[in-house]
Amino acid sequence: MTHMESALAEAMSTIEGAIGVALVDYTSGMALATLGDNQVVDLNVAAAGNTDVIRAKMRTMELLELQGTVEDMLITLSTQYHIIRPLTGKSGNGLFLYLVLDRKRANLAMARHRLARLEPDLEV
Image (cartoon, rainbow, N blue to C red):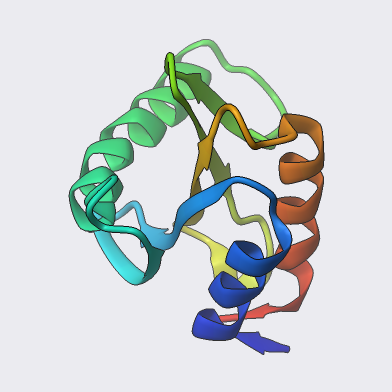
């Protein structure tokens, strides 16, 4: 099991192009832990704002009676990628990982893969 801070540090050190990462409670909109360059992106503000994104998607899936779960959500900006990954484990219900990447330096497929590999060992 990896504590929140260790998991975020691992994400920042192993994901090429990582600018910032946060573990967020989407029931409250609060970031439980953040790590990264707050001068590039305020991770607490981003956590609160992206809570609305994930809530809207969950509501839409419910209204459409879609089965399955969201693996991740990608927001593509001109200079950045933002990945929202809801946690699916027992202790992760209502939480998501939020990752901001520098688009010029990031390998999107590898970033998604590494972010997904953090979840099973994440201890909340």
